[in-house]
Amino acid sequence: MSSHPPSTGITITLSTEDSYSPYMVEEDTDKARAASETPGLEKHSERRQPRVLTFYRSISWMLGFRDKYSLLNCFVWGGALVGFCLARSITMNPGRTPHLLVPGEWFWLSQSIYKPNLFIHIYLATFGGIGALFQFLPVIRRRNVILHRINGYAVLLCLIVAVTCGSIVARRSFGGDVNSQSSYYIQAIMIISAALMGIYNVKKDTRRHRKWMLRMVVYFVTVLTARLIALPARAIMTIIGTYYTVWRCDEVISLLRAPETIQSSFPQCAAAGINPVDVYVAVHASTHDAPLYVASAARAAQGMALWIAIVIHIIGVEFYIFQTDAANQVRLNFALEPHDFTQT
Ligand code: HEM
Image (tube, rainbow, N blue to C red; front, side, top):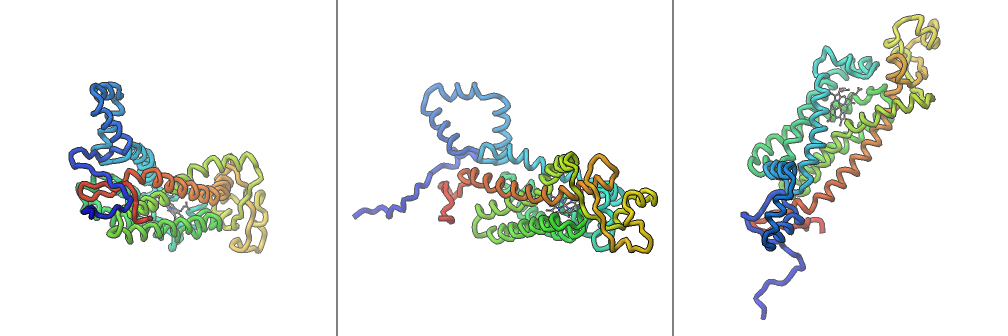
């Protein structure tokens, strides 16, 4: 009778602490093994490695990344997130905010219900966005798990409250266009659902926790991609020349101001006896005209840009999770499990 335990058909790779490299993926391990087994090859490959690659690998090692492209991803996407947060942090100054928004936005967002929500959103989205980057540095997770935990809860609180306040503002954002509104709400639902799934899995399954938290942050940054899409979209709509958005007369008057201009461009809004709150007009979308028309182009493009960005981010994050799955092995003492057995 055999004394061996029954075979499960699962291959478990054994590794020792000393030979383990946090950013080495299977391919690298194979190369290292081949180099050590072939005399002279190690020195040769070391000589051929460009300095920039050595530098990249050193930083990657120091930050604790396992996958060779993780640092690059962290640099590009994390940099974009932090860059966006810092760039828009100028809107934290209430004196400057009205001038930094798209023309016409302040007409609604200055109202008592939206203004505090807008500022809570701006502050918490900025702090939460910057804080989120640190959650993805493996070196913090491994060496200072308390910091990871405290920062994690702070980021979650910031993002969930920021998104909730953002959704309240979305009711009137970009004129309250239903296309924009619905995409903001869907984003909020996606972000909060991913956050809740991440919290649910934090103690149960670290790998799932990582995946959901990645999704949450990637969904959160959709607005950045939306801005990049909206800019050329506004220009293209201007070139096509047949796009219009619907504005209420009091919004139009708040931007045009001069009675003669209102009379000549939107006579319906200047007609005797009308209530500007009840009359709506079509405003041409054009980035080459006065602020009213530029704002109309922004409104026309916003919803479409947000929806396209949502799709891009969903596909992007799932692709990234798929690509990096093998590198995120479960470490059980000396054993590394390359597959997620919880999903089979
Ligand atoms: C990295 C993530 C985010 C950052 C840094 C951020 C930051 C900001 C800032 C600074 C503003 C002020 C306006 C401006 O900059 O043009 C703003 C506006 C706004 N944000 Fe966010 N935000 C983020 C994500 C979100 C998300 C996920 C939502 C979805 C609920 C959202 C909804 C809004 C809305 C509705 C406005 C008002 C836009 C307007 O009418 O001009 N934001 N955000």
